[in-house]
Amino acid sequence: MNQDASGATPAQHPLASIVPLALPLVAQTISVLHALWNPQSWPAGIPATLQAEVLAITTYERNSFLGDHEGTGGGGGGAYDTEDASTLVSSSSITIASELAALRLYLYNLRVACYQFMGQLTQVRDVLYATPSFAQIVTTSTFANIDFIELRHWRHLLSTNGCLLLFFIY
Image 1 (cartoon, rainbow, N blue to C red):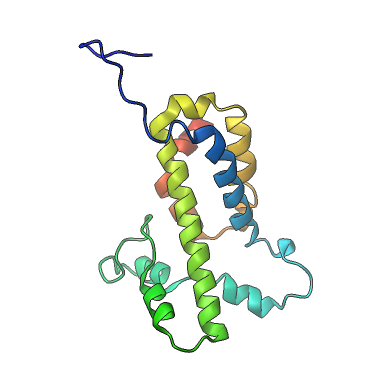
Image 2 (cartoon, rainbow, N blue to C red):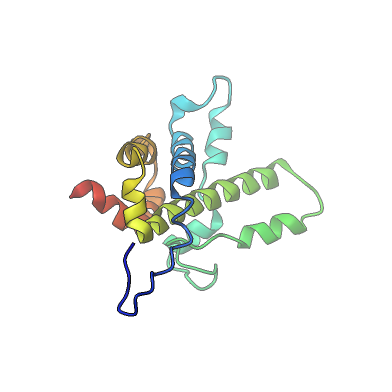
C-alpha cells in the first residue's frame, strides 16, 4: 500500500470496499432503466398511451432544459427532483395522474442516482479497474438499449460519467 512522506498509509476511500458488489447491481439497474425506452421491452397489451405517460419528462427536467436552474433546485446535471414529490405527498386523493407522476419521478431520481454512483466510482479507479469483468459489466449494461434513450438521459449520463466513459475511448 502507498505511504505518504510521514510513513502513514492513506485512508481507503469509503466506496472502495463496495465497488465489486455494487458495480454489477447498479449497472444492471441502468440497463433496465434504458430498456424502458425500448418499445419492444414492454409486455404486449399495455397501451401505447400508458407507456407514453410513464416515460414522459418530469416537470423538473422540463424546467431545467428551459434554463430555470434556481426555481427547481438545480440545473438538471444531477440534482434530484423534489418539487413534484411534495405535491404528490400532500395530495389527499390518489388519482391515476398522481400515481403516474410519482412513477415518473421515481424513474427520474433512480436514473440520476445510478448515473451519479457510477460517476463517483472514478474516485476509486484502481479498485474499479481491478474489478473482474469491469469493462464487460459497464458496456453490456450502461450501453444496453442506448439507441432508445432520449437526449435528457444522454445529458445526465455524460455530465455525471464523463470520466468513466473516457475509459472506453482510450
